[in-house]
Image (cartoon, rainbow over all chains, first blue to last red; front, side, top):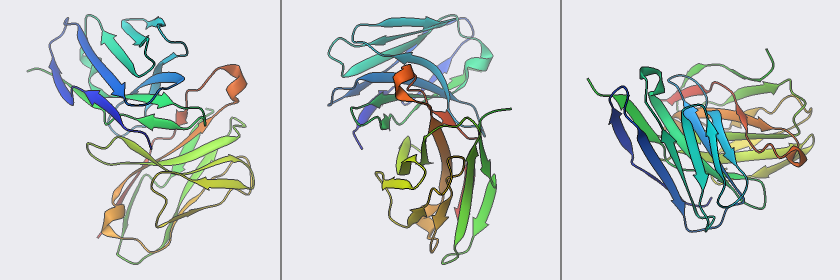
Length: 110
Length: 115
């Protein structure tokens, strides 16, 4: 599979903060996807991006498909406790297979 | 509710045992796949199928077999379990690509421990 570099690996959030994470690849992708995984569950699709430069929002989530087609970022605005979980980026290549990043673990700061 | 159903949710095996992880979807999706999730490594593709009777290898296929006799079911077989196969396994399916919906639907996972 193709290597996706996702950062940061983990982060602590305080309620109300804006948080940001990103993914980069050495290869071009045709689609970027962002998933969230809650404990004991499978990943759930948050946002799908289909075109270079595309900026898409889903509630407090905003994601962008990088112009070079090799990167994407996800922003969460005004974070709330239920935002904790693991966020994965995924890129789709021409053969329709997905390559996943290693994930960003979001935890609430005590 | 429509979706991807995986069984069992938890399993402990002894080294050398074999078992089958079950996956079923009721969305009439042609594409189904199996991933394993290990800490710090994201999800890695084991095997996938683009339709009944068609399967292919993913990134980490060794030690696993699959078959696709129906559209609904895509079982994953561990032939001779090894401790390196301790992982969380996810089955995922996807609808037709022409609908511009490339998001996969995942099952809730099977947590497998090989001792």
